[in-house]
Image (cartoon, rainbow over all chains, first blue to last red; front, side, top):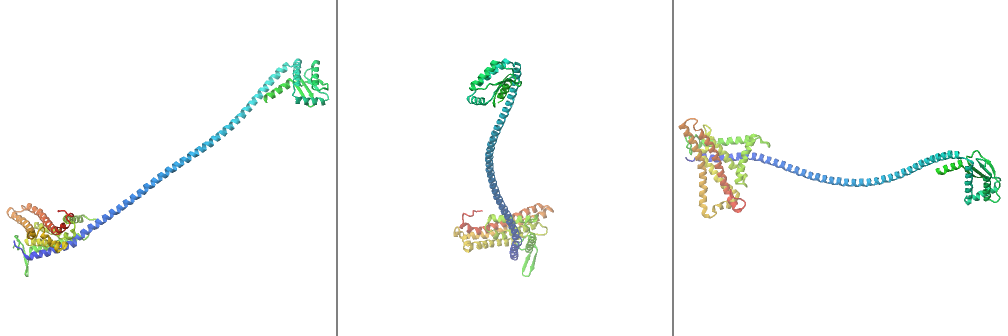
Length: 246
Length: 233
């Protein structure tokens, strides 16, 4: 067990050469490729980190925009609801006014229709009543009824209003001969009553002419100039029917 | 024939005044083989490694991490020497299980050469990194009285480094040979399996001790200057 110095020196040289060769051809290339891969991985990681941060920023922007849009939508909805409320109120008011006008129009129309219908009914009722009364009075027509009618006419003549009485007096003064017509031949006392009544209107009353008029049903008609005083059943019924319809 | 420094039969050649032993030839062959393998293995390295590249990178990364755990600030400077020690000694130790070959590490001349390299490397790295005063100063600490003990320690640990590797590998080969002579064919197989384990362990021990010696030479000054930055490993 002794040391061979040649082997000793050769071994040192050998090993130093091996160290250089392995460093040159093994350690450096392998460590270099590991470092390159690590750099690539770090670059990939940094790129991924950058992409993630960018994505996070985009997400924040997106969330912010979503929040803004949501707030804007809420404001728009509130504004729309407000406008709809105003519009609804306005249209409801317009509709109420329109309905009121329509109701008023319909009410007036109904009133007119009702008034017309009532008038028609009244006219029909008056006509029927007049017809009924005419038939009844035609059956009751008689000289005594005519005397009563003449009496009524003379009473009305005595209660004429002053203007009409003046007008009649003036017409009586200008008339040459008043005409007194009756349905039945008039009795003397009846004629005398008529003459007295006319004389009561004016001091110089002319003597009337008496005649029978078939057109009269039962009553008397006095013609003084342009004025006609009539107390006939048919005439009274006609006036009754006209007055009822009016 | 036995080579000087070897108890095993070994060839030797004479080239003029030089006597070239089989150990030197085998060592040269290992160097050539490792050079060729490393050149071929690293010829087509890719960023997306294949299976062979994964193994290669794993081995180199493992060595680097081991050195970084001991000397985190000087990995690039120390790694070529220590990693080459591991690889070279491992291959040299395992060469003994190849029929017809002997482990060159069973030759004291080789292990002494490697130990001498480690001895010189400790001082080389210490002087290079700490400077002359800083490095030589640690021999005087904690007291100048420790100088003889430091020097003795340097010599004895270098001697132990050489003899430990030589003794283990030589004894393994001798054991295998004796068992083969006594018991016959195939009986030394368990001894050879033990040889594999011992080859790995001895390579690791030699490289790790070299690393620790170098780290001790470097860190003795740095740890004194920055005691809070590094804790004893």
